Length: 586
Image (cartoon, rainbow, N blue to C red; front, side, top):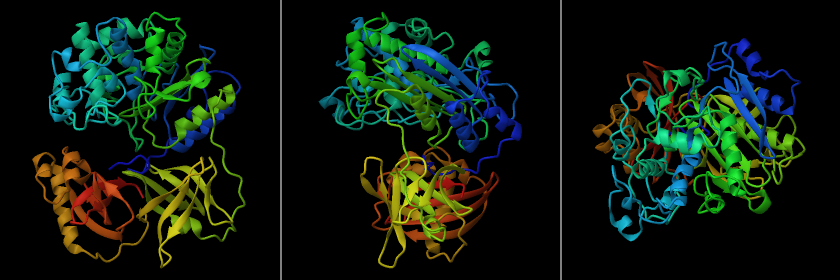
């Protein structure tokens, strides 16, 4: 549900004054190539505000800010405007735990239950074989559940960290359900365990400990893990905006899961974190020893060190991390030895490649070592009469629970991401569709009748994989329902989903995977006044899976609700149960 490349609701168009503000940097200087890329991405993706910092030779050499702190507002983003860092909180907070290892108060490889006091990892057959350790917590290999956290509305009751860990907040209990050390699986839950560990060992509240031991020593004077922020700092914040480009109610969410998602900061301060790590790596910092820093930047599994993600090696070793909170996205990348790097933060959620394109523009302008920015393939275009764009228009399962949406407008095929145009594709003389943005292409895969059942997707490294077709867009005309019995079952299932809780966990109309995931009420299914079947597609054998269940059919419905029209794609397993659903915009 709500996949990274699928659309949710059609985004609202920004006012012309906002576009003009977004396309001009706040500093008075001649616009350059970076500004041009920023302006294009902000306009195309309707990003309200953006701030960035550039690192060169271990120094912050530039800060730039664009746009406004809220849609329709006049207050401009400045380099001092605070943004939520999302998961970039993880590598920053990891420094506190690694400091305790440096000091001998913690061990990377001992059972964390030896030091936990206010809460302990529940024992089970997996933990009896292998312990949960700090190394595994920091590298996402502890076997713990809960990927991430939605946060809490401003003014809502906020649970304690032990309550979060035991599932008494708005997420499930954090538990070991695979053998620790056996796999890499991203876990914000694991970092919340680490947060409690740091508090139990230090005896100091987490925001205070991080302020005194990490933020202040690194010169991150505008940053704080306080949740919620005190009034003086809250006045310096940007307002978050959702995937549908609407503002977050209350401006932002509160995260008691501070180590995983609770850092308020600026790109300049995150650049100071990166410079601090560069100095630690060189043995020129008292914050963390060079030996511990090298362990931190050594891959443990699946491209992750002890906090940051890592890439390359030797002189081009770099560390990086992305972040998302409700209404905020961010990206950080830096080289351990050369002293290069950049941070980009926006006050919106955006599932396109916009932030990556801005990082690429900075890398090109600053001539980063060993950085390979995407380059589009030079191809011969097909005749304008080519039918390929219209034929391939539709939705595809790009990855598990991650849809690729292709839409045609004015004869141009593009990737639709959350209702907005992203990547353009041109038909070629050899029957492919090629990106105008990078060296990626695909060609349709057809069955014996000539119907498109997927695409063969070729990545920049030359590898090709099959991406199955889910079905058409909602631009098709409504047809005859081939299975009215299932539609009646779906009507009952969506009532269960709208109710949540026991109505979901006890529903025989949902798969086991769906019952485990959708325990919170699904507001898109609340107060439905009318339902219309649109189309369904048999996808048996295409390899589509949702929440652990193979999908054999996908049905499309229009729902009229008190909140407006909802376009819903329902994924059905072989037993006729609902395995997943997507709310889309086209």
